[in-house]
Length: 194
Image 1 (cartoon, rainbow, N blue to C red):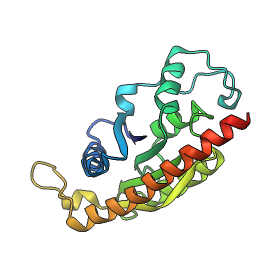
Image 2: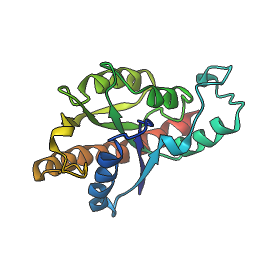
Image 3: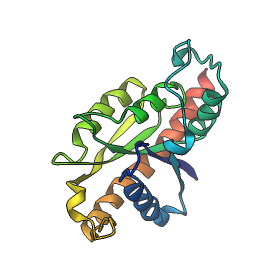
Image 4: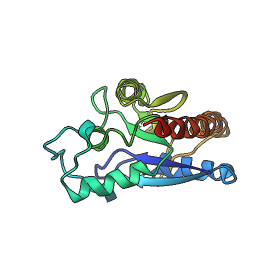
């Protein structure tokens, strides 16, 4: 079994991201025989603005909140980043959470589910791909975009996910689970050489 964390990146009041994060978690239930998926809400994690004096790549964490975050991410084998797009880029809460750590992200695959206005989170995802590359992550090319999500909500604000979106989500998760299993073995091989 592999452990995949779904990271909900936005923490702002009234955020839409809870809906796609909970939806992708529900879709992931069909992989219960090979993977466990856990939803991690950065609002609940409540990290401060990056306050470690030593860069994360030195693996010398001073603060208890960093050590706790390190444990959460370190036990994961792969990730889904649920990302909003603010001003053509990543939500600062998500980038901040990523920047706290280094080795905990290494050699793990990541998939992206973006949402926003006309681009649906595409620009945030493209920025995240560069960040993931620097962290030695493997970014899955299959991804999800929810464009102009606010036009597809009912009178109570609930988003109506389509059958096509579920099919696309499963194609993304198929790749993520495959690469998570494959890279777990590769990480174990690398660890045995160090």
